[in-house]
Amino acid sequence: MSQPYDLAIRAGSVYADGEWRSAVVAVRDGVVAMIADHDEDVPAHVTVTLPEGQVLIPGVVDSHVHVNEPGRTEWEGFTTATRAAAAGGVTTVVDMPLNSIPPTTTVEGLAVKRAAAEPQASVDVGFWGGAIPSNLGALEPLWREGVFGFKAFLAPSGVDEFPHLSGSELLEAMQEIASFDGLLIVHAEDPAVLERSENHGGQDYRAFVASRPDLAEEDAIAHVIAGVRATGARAHILHLSSARALDQIRAAKAEGLPLTVETCPHYLAFSAEHIPDGATQFKCCPPIRDEANRDLLWEALLDGTIDLIASDHSPSTAELKFKGDGDFQEAWGGISGLQLSLPAVWTAARERGIPLDRVIGWMSEGTSALVGLTGVKGAITAGAAADLVAFAPEESFAVHAEALEHKNKVSAFDGRTLHGVVHTTWLAGDVVHVLGAEGTVGDTQRVPGGKLLTRSTN
Image (cartoon, rainbow, N blue to C red; front, side, top):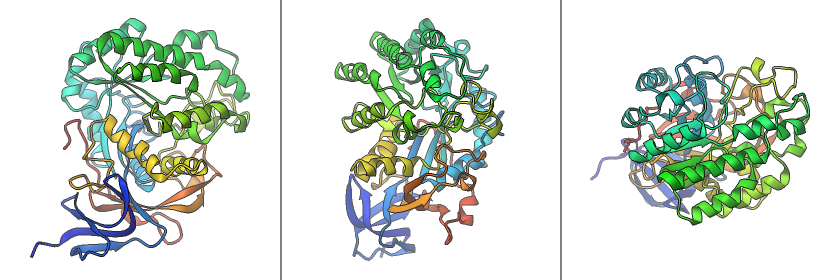
């Protein structure tokens, strides 16, 4: 007789191998060992049966997270960020190379990041490298050390230690990255357009949007596409906000260029018409645009023009977020959405009649594919990591910013009612989050259980 499995989770609805089925998921040594029929006897040391209303889905892979530790740990750190992730059903985060000091632009900087993350992480953590003017020509050592790719800004990043690339530097970076088949991920706003569009700021949200117009994204994305065509480099457009860039993206993909695109929960859940003046908790760059634009982003997700959804969790201290007393020019730009990304997207999708499996495709499968972890993360399938979430899609909850796990209790979602409650999160078969009886987080979430990922993770 074979040895019992470590864990067996029985559920009336499991999203496994690309379809919904009634099943038992058996786990051994941190991976999915078998998926059996629901009524099959599966001996295990621990057996969990999900109640009616809860479904079993793969953990979310969030490929766009700013943790900021070390250097700006008062903004966010690995303890709080990964607790927030686990509470939101996110089992893997890939950390951005800027806002920490030092930035992840050298092998030494990567080592500092890893040393900070390893003892604190409640979920698995991977790292992006950065491409800045001073490290061009020296990107391959970072790639060999296991970063998943290289982030570049085409306009000022907001922090002095991570300067943006000029047009010629962008091409140089793409040539270098193509030489070792790396991946460039790009904050695509054109600095010349932004400079021409500058205004006096203030509390008027419409004036803020006007200061970062669609054309800034359109022109910058055109530069990226031209670079991909010239060099063959793989490129990924981060946090697409403007639907006006979709036609050129569609054309580039039809041409067969290796281009992928993401958007974010806040662009899909909010619209400019409903953002009050002075509400700088909604400030992000590029900005949240109007309802018609939002509808087009959803259409582009459904037709495959946009490949995936990632949170762009970009927190700061409350002091910085509300700097200038509602002045959008003065306040820090960034949405803290890591814990709420899954329910926020599901709520908006549900309202549009979009099924949950499409959301899983964008937030678990698509993000895993971006970072080369297909078959390892983002799906319930034999041999994949047992990163699993007990999710109640029809349960709702009111967001209270003070109750969220990230460090600074500011949220654009504060006060909103969202559908989709994460009851339990398993990382490699171990519980890293459980919802308490009164809706509180259980103690199991406090135990760091994550590991550090590299591009060669298998």
